[in-house]
Image (tube, rainbow, N blue to C red; front, side, top):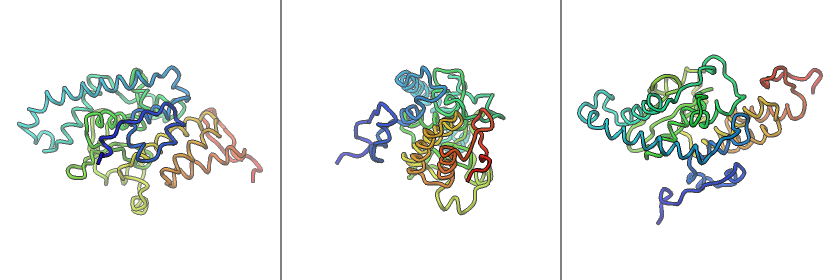
Length: 286
């Protein structure tokens, strides 16, 4: 019997084609390709070449692989430097190569001024073949993209208003990885129960936050980011489509709220008050 990992990869050429795939088919789509298809047609994606970005990612993964081989003897001699953790060693090497050697960085403009107006801040093309830099919406995805090219069991995880990645080996280590800043942090789940916003026991039990995401939920994260960008540009009907698709795959209160809010905007019961897409209730709306 052929396992899922032995099946040929699928390469959809458009977002519409991607959205038609069943969950078992989505599992055969490169996470990077999935992310980039969700960015197509958004402000900031003009001139984006998906084949070029994917080629660069393959080159970056090879560079990380070679550096990991070079550093591995040191780790084997003294694993305590990495807390006796192979996951820590491999992911610290990955993050170091990306940041120190390849120039991956947080977009300094977004440290204190979050903005969804440019897809370069939300998707990985802003980090590849670009000097834009990224945010917590894109840097964990890049880590996961490179890690999966190396065969590492790395998945995405949502905290409240934050995204990070996790080495999640069912038969081995589990380690949270956060490099949305300088270097790499490995905070435990208890940290994210309080930061950046408190997460309740009920929200964890419901699977709204702090779980390793499935491939469908990865796609939901990217679709929600697409919705945010469209919403901020007043493209409410397209934003609604993105939010509904996200909520279908991951029906959390957040995604359902995004869809409900955007339905109000489409119906004209909310109006923009600033150029960034902020809304207030229309006077006299019912």
